Length: 315
Image (tube, rainbow, N blue to C red; front, side, top):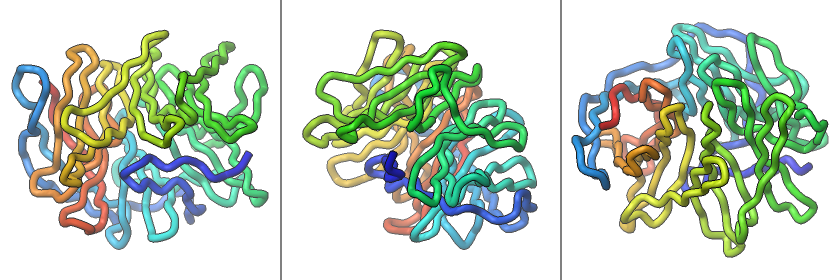
């Protein structure tokens, strides 16, 4: 399988990390600063707007940072970006642990559950992508119960179910879910590429997809039911991860080119815009069961991406 893996459209997410250095580093080089205490705006369902305060968290203050997911005890999975690559890091209090599968020449982290188990893929010297699972300091190749190869795990639930994608002979991406002895694949009519990005303990999945014309679509899949997500007034909606309360986050772009974070509450069928106050652009990547958010923002247009965590709640 080719190692040219997807990038999330619109956010220019780097998906080809280089191998980091030492296994555990003190987080002395990171920057943690409180940004603001402010409310979010614009929801499509009546009720008070969500209120969040944001804290800036940079893995390396000399580079760009994207935070992907948070877990128990404050653990955060993030990416340290350069102009050409990205490295994975697990932040746990004052410790920063680079995630680099020793079997590969580059490692890309894709998802993490509340217990801190990480899934993703590494690239071999032969330019082949191999899925991995990282838990308790150990790496293992991802092998589903049917032994199928060429799978890229991108999301893991707290219960250990894993979702991801694989390519067919025509290089179309199809989705899969692996849980215990059960392995299922699925596709959508008219969609050439499916990329699961989030999975919760209820089996609800968030999916980013492309149709035959190349247009971007965001979906929420619950059993046989599939809902297309599109923030009202947006020209493009990018969905990311989902918590066990069926609340998902992502990023949307408006007609003026503005980039905004949003949350979607599937129970209320409500969208909420959530932006870092004063920022030129906001992207949301993860939401945990306490409704804490992680992602990144740009303080000025075209400025560097800076990691952030948001503390608050949805209505």
